[in-house]
Amino acid sequence: LWTNRNGRRGQKLEFRHFVANGYANGWIVEPNQLVSNQLFISYQPQRQLNTLIKLSGLALLATLGYLGLPALLKKKKRVTNES
Image (cartoon, rainbow, N blue to C red; front, side, top):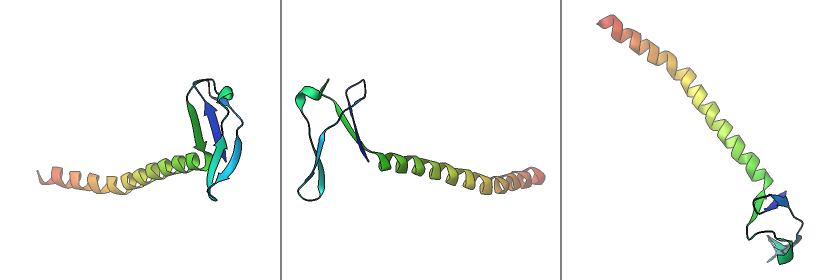
């Protein structure tokens, strides 16, 4: 579930995992494994959740547009007929 990447090249590295303080995730990082000082750790399910939230937002906007467009067209038609 957890992935890690090192530096600009995005190398996947293997670190020793342990449970810290009885609940948190921890890794032992050996300095000689690192190519640069940057280390990116991500939780895969969170990335999927973020994508689904964006898709839900787009679906909501599409639904509001679909439901709101006829009302706008009716209003515009009414205004032009009154003129």
